[in-house]
Image (cartoon, rainbow, N blue to C red; front, side):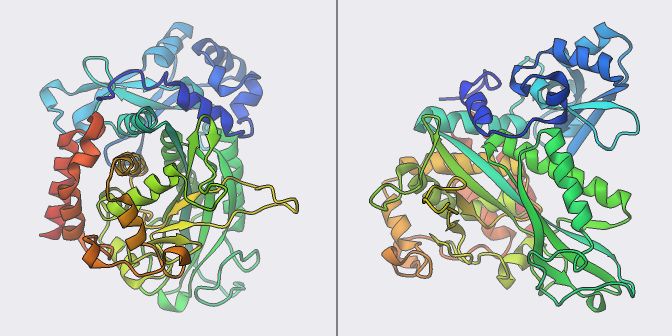
Length: 486
């Protein structure tokens, strides 16, 4: 069944968003109503009452980068037109190589009222909001990453009854010139360090505050393990940090990652720091991951991952199987730079084998421990962690690919064989045994673009199923991967 319309009104997206329990954003506080209930009239009143001068329509292009179209509303009518109708743009420039020809390249930015926030970096009061894309026919544009992830999210729930939520662990490095006042530790010893042993703590805390005020769900943040001494980098000190976001439906989770990158880059620029999401800042040191945690939602309740007898639930089995079986192909969306292969090849805080296991940080897929109170109640939902993606990931396409992989494994007759063959002996003693090539399953993470391209080509039907990834997008991805390998 193709998914081609009604994505914005799908009730599961709204249910999952409301279940997140996020603190009110700054705009919610000022309007006095939840974002899900906002109308264009609410924003018109807000703009007039708060002295907003500019309106910024933000959206994600084919390259995964955040784009902006700014307006200075002339009057109330003009403002209402922007909020309800959006504006045209050049689709051939936004989505190059995806079949939009310059002679007929108009697309329309479609604002999402509930995503509006005050731009914390604008010199004058500016209301920003995220947009989807529509084609010349008025329907969701197939080549838009926003459309792709929404179609995948809707298809998964319609076909499996599971509404998948996700959160990204956004790792990043901050760099600056070292000086005599620095008080720091040793290489790879930055985990949970606090000031004065890290210089990036104020920026990290500021980012948390801004993201929460924008309505981006956040969980926590801390200094990460990575630390590169200035003697190795010509006098530049690099330290690693992480912001873990809050669980949200796949489309909102992808948006949250893009906005977090945007906030961090803006803060670093304002403070004269370098901010890097590169998979490897320097060879031999911890890389920059973008791990994703997933929580299946069934009948408006987050899945427990295991049943009362300790067995994996069906949604957990489908998701783990999909990540392991299609992990190599998912690198087309989640590991997009040459240095991505340095990160997995050196196996420092990154998986090199296609395995899964309880608590195993070396595995591709990990089932983390769940914190509980003294009475045994979970302090947070159980999640399934995918540890392969890195800072080069295109989050919208990656999360769409994960949903497609999960849907595929629901129907797989070899799922049990796959789970048994890929269980990590360190993390899944009940399924002990290293993965075996004899089971017909690849065991190692690809070490270059040719291996990723081969996996994507072999399983492209999985991604194209249900009209989620347009064939022209897969063709373009394959051309890029194979061109990079040439």
